[in-house]
Image (cartoon, rainbow, N blue to C red; front, side, top):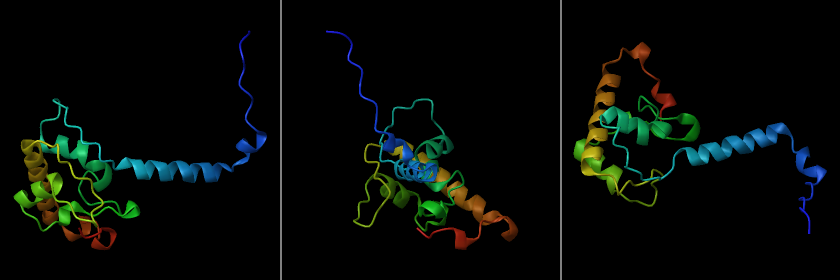
Length: 141
């Protein structure tokens, strides 16, 4: 018996407009960008900034101002203190929550992220008004 070649896909498969394929691809990208992948095996990431960028930046932005398009809140607007932020990251579960809980995150890592978030918040508050992202473009946490 020889090599069996797969049948060609029907021609109709390739008649999906490129704009529809692009929209579908973007939707999949948005839905998978903020994942609950609770990976903490990254010894090269030590600073709070590095850890924030690894775990939070994809959804909340590098400056913590959120992403209006995806409906992600600006975590720099949080009213939580450091310990409450750590609790929220690692164990706060409520039915309306969309952010994943990182329950495998080591305490020291969560503290470093919380401290960096509070630095981002302080830096944002110190910006002159004309340099701040308008609150209308940020979603309150």
